[in-house]
Image 1 (cartoon, rainbow, N blue to C red):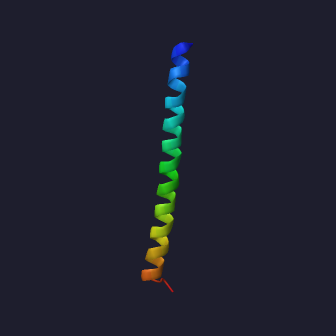
Image 2: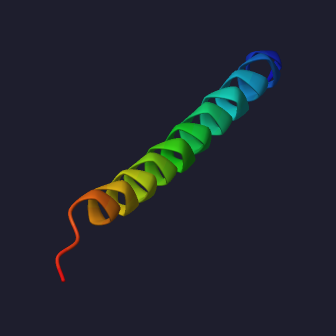
Length: 43
């Protein structure tokens, strides 16, 4: 049970990093798509 309490903060840290990575990746692709549409308008 002691090992579980040691691993828990580490797992939470990995989750935070994972969600931050996903959020930034999503933000990056949205801004990239907006930039492409701004530079090369399809209409």
